[in-house]
Amino acid sequence: MDTSSIARITSPQSSPCNESLDNTITCSFRQAMLSDISSILEVENDSFDVKERFNSEIFTWLLISYPELFLVLECGNEIAGYAVGVIEANRCQLVSIAVKSTYRGRRLGKCLLRAFEDKCLKFNVGSIRLEVKVSNNVALRLYLSEGYRVIGKIKNYYSDGSDALLLEKRLSNI
Ligand SMILES: CC(C)(COP(=O)(O)OP(=O)(O)OC[C@H]1O[C@@H](n2cnc3c(N)ncnc32)[C@H](O)[C@@H]1OP(=O)(O)O)[C@@H](O)C(=O)NCCC(=O)NCCS
Image (cartoon, rainbow, N blue to C red; front, side):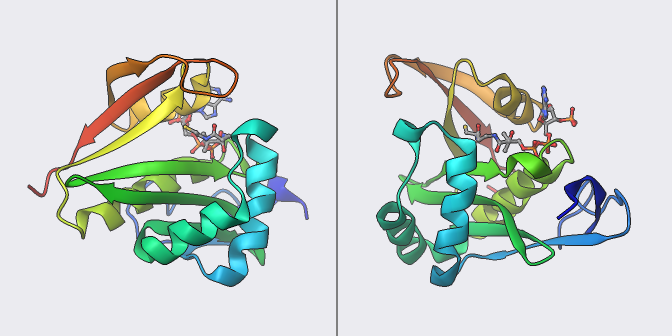
């Protein structure tokens, strides 16, 4: 598939998710299904180091536990990304978000994040939290540009000994 030609991004979200990139492939969001897990694993394997990847058992548990907080991004007939979270202590936790490398840099990650936030709003939570590796500049830029702020650091959070930054965004419906 020629992913240089992703086109309209159709989603219920507001801009930038309706931006037109070109006219061949349409991307949209929907709730994940169990039958998506193998495609989600392809995104996972493409996006994270082997020791940090979730496996099918974890994805299945997440999907069964919080189906509304597990979104996939579908471009044409391919799963190009996902975002998944849980609710903890009156907060949404963004557990993971990824866009397949061939689809990155087209604002799809930003759209996915906004779609996830829209879902969280429905649960009447006050905030969203997430962890990001200190060296993950792309993800960090995404979060900071979307209104997340750094509220802490967790030492040795990742399997390679890297620290995590703890980020939070307050939601406006509370
Ligand atoms: C993080 C990720 C989901 C972003 O997805 P994406 O579709 O490439 O991101 P977008 O095109 O929507 O860009 C969103 C923002 O990210 C930042 N960004 C994207 N690509 C970037 C790059 N190459 N360099 C620096 N910043 C970049 C920018 O701030 C951008 O906003 P802008 O376009 O308004 O400047 C994607 O890079 C990914 O899947 N990475 C691997 C998995 C991962 O690290 N997940 C996060 C774990 S915490």
